[in-house]
Length: 172
Image (cartoon, rainbow, N blue to C red):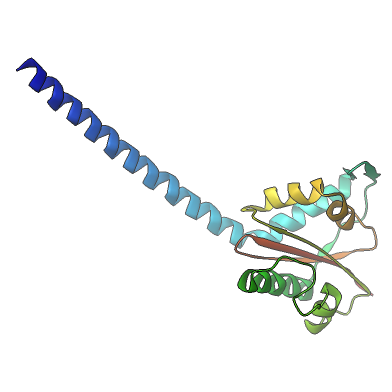
C-alpha cells in the first residue's frame, strides 16, 4: 500500500511539473511574439537613433579609429529602396548588394525617386532586433566604415523576415 501511494504522488508531481512547463512555455512564446511586433514598429526610430549615436561619438571600425561625423536624417526614398531590397532577398532567397540581375543600390534608389549624389548600403541576415544587427554592422569593418562615412547625410532602412538593409545617401 505504501508503494501505491508513492506511485500516485509521483504521478501527481510529474503531472503538475508538466502543467507548469506547459504554462511557462506558453508565456515565453507569447512574450517573444510581442517583442517581434515591437521591432517591426520601431525600426526607423531605433536604427536612426543608434546610427546617429555612433556617428556622434565616433567608433573603431576594425583597427581604424573613426572620428565623430554629422548626424543623418531619414529619407523615405532610401527607406523604400532598402525595404524592397530586403523583401526581394527574402522572397528570392539570395543575399547580396546586387540583385540577381546585377542591379546595385544606387540604381534601385533612383527607381524609388532618390536624387542624392551618392548611395551606399549595408545588409545583414539572421538578426532579430535592431540592437543585434547594429552590433553586427559595427563589428564588420566595411559596414562600420560605410555607416561612419561623412559623405552620407541621409539614411533609410528596411527589414523583411531576418533580412536587414540600410541605404545611406548624400542629398544634393
